[in-house]
Image 1 (cartoon, rainbow, N blue to C red):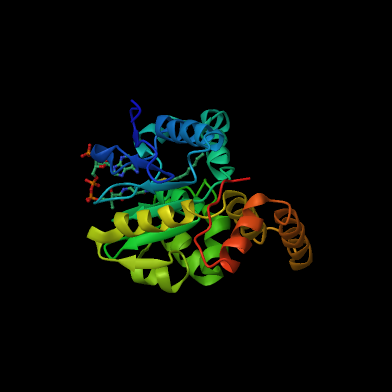
Image 2: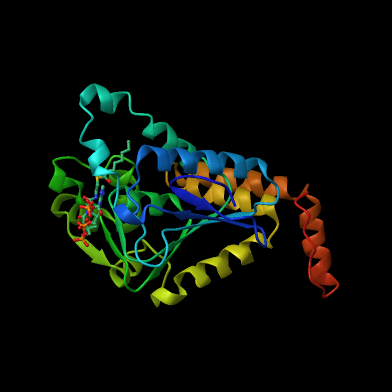
Length: 259
Ligand code: CO8
């Protein structure tokens, strides 16, 4: 356990590092310090071979209500231009290992955007998603206009961003923003179960699969398929691929080493 101000970082358990957003007094609003602590934690996790997957949660009641509006209020245009937060978002975005989000309650604005930085989202049936920036005279600033349209399509992205309305967990699942909805008491447990399962898989294959899937957002089908083929070929050179196939043939559990 590390001593941080805005997030709680667990010891690695079963290959999973858990990050809990910890500003209950402000609905886990993502102030600059919180984003910096997250970016630093993820940077360290890239280099830690024990970390196979990361679980991100806001706790039982709320995921995050967005950027810290009180902090944002003091920034003029020059302040926004020199804002270090985009750098932290870029570092979070570049994290190459799988990230699973466990989302209960509000995931709004930057909170919804943080959720969309995660690779898999498990939501409690009390979750609500929204991009209410329009009510503040601004627009999403951490990828919402781009990632949302890729996740839920144009009409729903427009609806959320232009009206500021929230949608429910079930709607989020129907539109592909989350993959499973469970009762709120089970959100963390189910997300952890998934993260732990992924942590048992061959790490290089997991990493390349994540990279290939994310690439599909921003490339043509042809170059995406090309990347997939190269990654597939590269995996033939790994010990874990030989181990996986040998274990199947010998009807035993594979023992992956990350080599
Ligand atoms: N920032 C700061 N404080 C917040 C935030 C926030 N986003 N959300 C809630 N709080 C605080 C409230 O001020 C209040 O504090 P206090 O008790 O000291 O007054 C406390 O949390 C509880 O809030 P409420 O009393 O409002 O609780 P309700 O249950 O009535 O409502 C809501 C909960 C619906 C979550 C409501 O608080 C709300 O609408 N919050 C704001 C949501 C929002 O507009 N989010 C978007 C923010 S802008 C953004 O995210 C842009 C991201 C751009 C990133 C760019 C990076 C470069």
